[in-house]
Length: 610
Ligand SMILES: Nc1ncnc2c1ncn2[C@@H]1O[C@H](COP(=O)(O)OP(=O)(O)OP(=O)(O)O)[C@@H](O)[C@H]1O
Image 1 (cartoon, helix red, strand yellow):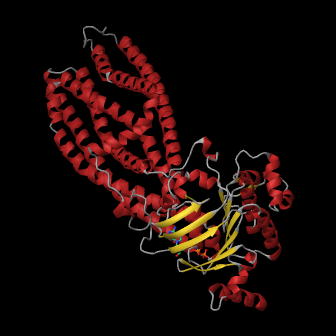
Image 2: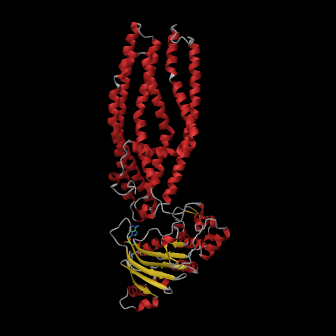
Image 3: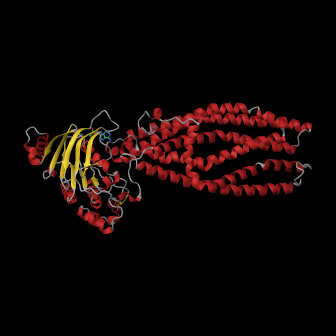
């Protein structure tokens, strides 16, 4: 299991620190597999890049020759020593490199965009196929930043950094050769400085790498706060916690700035040190070069050529810290993206055939001595020993005090988790006999808090059956008692609902969820009754819709209001992880000291009081 995304303050300690080693490069190489389909374009891009870098290197020689030509000297016997000819040749070559650069940039950006889209698509597909427990450990904001910030980092490398590194390497290597060629004495003077720069680069690189990784993680943390706050904006406002949230976000941002500034200090020190060394060398060269010109050992044109080449070389060296840091950031980012890609998904069908039921279930369901602990809290036995049986078409109610594991039962029926012990059977066959998709295709849940997707009401209902016809959607909405209120909106079924369905009331959202479930037409239905009570008219509407939904299928009702389950075929009372009572309403109210009887009396009294 990847450790990198755990939430909380321990994140810094737990995040893997990327070291530029063979293993990491090999891993990152996996990301570059995504470029493979575009290798021909990539090859052409590289070719243009190398060609334009080589052409650029001819300029200092041409300009030097031009200066010598102006003084009546011929630098290269094979080149006419005419200032005009040399000037036009330089201009022509410049136009050619500009042309090559255009194609190079165009190709690299296209490849990177396409490759990145594939990585995003694959990560998304992987992510949504991961088991629920993966998400229990992580915050949405963190995962979001894997697919946005981290991939943007990789994108930068694919589009510019790689090309830039290659260009600068060519410029550096050939530049040095040309420096020696133009004047070995001057080159020797220059190259004395090189070891100092290399040692400093290794020393600073280590710090910069660590700091940029930390800055990225802090940024991800601050994004998480932003996202959580916006998602829960009504809570923030209701508790007048604007100031608290602003402070929380501000603290995170301060941490980002602190690390980023620290990184900038090191990077700035590194860059200025290198600039000092390199340009110091240029001064030394001009000084020594001027002496050589005075002695007649060097022409003015050669000195100009030399100075221009040394600027090329200096420029390349100066660009390496930034490029190196970018590569490190991208390696860190690819490692984290790969963590998602390497996670083991659930055995769930993600193909277009996923909706086709291969093994139909009639609706019988049984729990046999089921025990379960959440993987995140293995020490707490949420369910200790649960056994019950529902025949196809039964209406089963589950009641019990808050936090005893009623919703957990629903998660187990949906196979979000596997029990630690015992068996869950559908039609008397253990869950393992079915594919996950088959089970989930035949179970529907109407949750406590219905989350609507951003889109139209029509799309939200059709979520239960993606290929539903328009009439089917309307029919389902009618049966769910939602049609009349939907038609009151000017845009009817095309009314947009916000990210969390803010425009619809709780009861209206629930009826959409019921219409969704009706369209899905499952063999087994789970109703997680809303704890917050709706107003009586709304509740009546929802209740009628639920009665319609429960017809002809097995229904498991996680009940908070006992009045809705008097007619249940069986009521199961769950307390402290075991089934403490079970029977019909009439049977259970007879039990002396029974928990159900107690809850029933509490609710009846509450009603009388009200
Ligand atoms: N994803 C999770 N990871 C760890 N523990 C969890 C998780 N979900 C629920 N729990 C814990 O498991 C226990 C049972 O929770 P569950 O939601 O099933 O109770 P419930 O009976 O449905 O409660 P309520 O009636 O209040 O909805 C609780 O102690 C809860 O804190």
